[in-house]
Length: 104
Image (cartoon, rainbow, N blue to C red; front, top):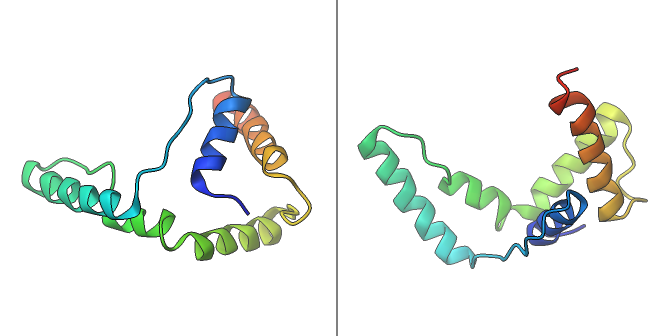
């Protein structure tokens, strides 16, 4: 398993983006998410970060990873246990280039 910062940096490197993504402390992000959620309610816009998303990628990370691993294995037979993070991210990016970006 990996964390979101490592995953994001790996994806950025594989795409040739020279960004060094940093992690925001969980309590700060949680506070910001409540502020953004409240602001969105007042202005009638959509919040880009919600408390639910912060919970999902923050403290709920282990359950989220287990769910995705099980889904990948069940739905498409992808073996997450014997792959490096770089291999899995590259596989995902290659799929996105074919399926998503090209519109096939």
